[in-house]
Amino acid sequence: MSETVKKFKFFLFSDIDKEEGWINEQRKEGLYLVDIPLTSLFYHFRKTDENIVPVTRIDFREFKNRSEYLDYLFLYEDAGWTVVKGSQRNGLQYFRQDNPEEGVDLYSDNNSKANLYLRYCKYLAIMFMCFLPILISLVLTSPFEIYTFKSAYLTPGLWEMSGLEFVKAFAFETPFAFFRIFGSWLLVILIGSNLVGAIINWRRYKRLKSD
Amino acid sequence: MKRHSALPLTETTYLILLSLLTPRHGYAIIQNVESISNNQVKIAAGTMYGALDNLSKQLWIEEIKTENNRRKVYQITSLGIEVLEAETERLAQNLRLGEQLLKGAEEHE
Image (cartoon, helix red, strand yellow):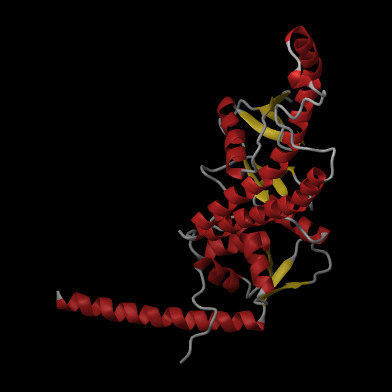
């Protein structure tokens, strides 16, 4: 049993094609996906010396009840797809095909593949609409604020100082200012990425549907 | 005569409905469709799951409760048979038309 090769990769935007593409790129080194302990950050691979390297595909689907989810897993398993990561409510389902034919995919026609993008788009849009009011209400009720460079420095009268006094005060506060800027923008970016992801998937859906 | 509103069906839908004249579970449908289409139509897992979902919602197929089987078994409904017969007639008409006109074109050359 070969060791686990761990790789770190950050995908800001929810882009199935990109993530799949990167995961399957690793096949050139004989690596196939075995686990994802932290969604979209750490990927665990294993190496194979065989000529045929398993292919990974990502599906998106949510299930109302356990029996639907199990039925889905059985169907995919019968068709040769092993679960790498996924759950009934999480939505993203990662599968691996151990003896893949060239270009094997979860979808065999444009219509059903388009619907995959539509499902994911709807999910991301809902995520965005849920978090946006939270962000807005946070901004409206201080002390939370989306900081710019100047406003992140809270020392009163800082910008009126000069010389050594200014340098000392500025240097002291810089780490705190950095965290204020970083923290508030991180929140904006994470919430906004849902919107961008929704748009990306909507476009893919539209393009495939019109073919 | 007014055409059934659901027509035309896609080839995948048509073959799945034909396959479900006999009760089957998901993967068995995939295998059966491949076989009856002479290996022309290979439905992938995701496409099949979506199709079963849609056809169930349209009430053209239904799930049969079975005792032991952990996999869901499906079967065509009477509404599904109605659609199937209408589509088969439509295909037959187009087939007759095609054979007729192509033969006519041949004779003129």
